[in-house]
Length: 323
Image (cartoon, rainbow, N blue to C red; front, side, top):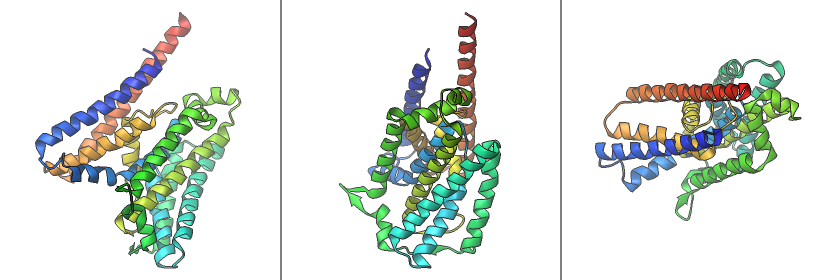
């Protein structure tokens, strides 16, 4: 079976899993399939989807970023303080927040590309740095009651659909277009598939690495704005943990842990699988700790399956070479 067919099979399998989970939870609770609950599942996960899109650029490019949640922590408190402490205009606070997030991603990318340290180690280290800076800046304070112009991100509606849902749809469509129709997207896929082959093909791999981390930072900062607008409050504790959800959703959704493949529809489906699991288990009376166990097992299973696919592809490639 070709690689394209394997990817398609995995994409549709993930969708089938989502449908099965929804059917199962509809039996465990009469409230699960209500319009209100399904609407809540969508609206509560918009910022997870946007952040996961950002992480997908790094993962498809063959990297990893464990600092996503800590970037959100720092961007969140800086944006909030600009609005409620320094009383900067909302538009300027948003611009500063997005610029800061992009800069944090750029910083990660520069170290990964130039120092050539394994991305997991780099982003594990920078996550601690970002979190420390966040607490120093915020002095462990909580910031709330943002201007109405900022809250409209999640309270405003167009065609009775919240603005943040529209923003999420645009981000997903944009990312899908980038991977399918642009040379940048093709270069990211090539970089993750085989970095040395990409370099020999004329792709500037160092610049591409920096670019995918900067793109991740941009989308993560956008997700942060949605997150703190939705909560109307933030502190340095907001954000950490998001990286685990995004990473799990990405792998479940078909984005390879070693890079080179993935699709946005599968990624979004992966986010909703985790969301439906959390929501359904909560309605069924299962506690938060049980959800941790299930999500951890899902991540382990998804990584194992990804490694299994990788081994099969390598065997097929070796057989083809010796034939």
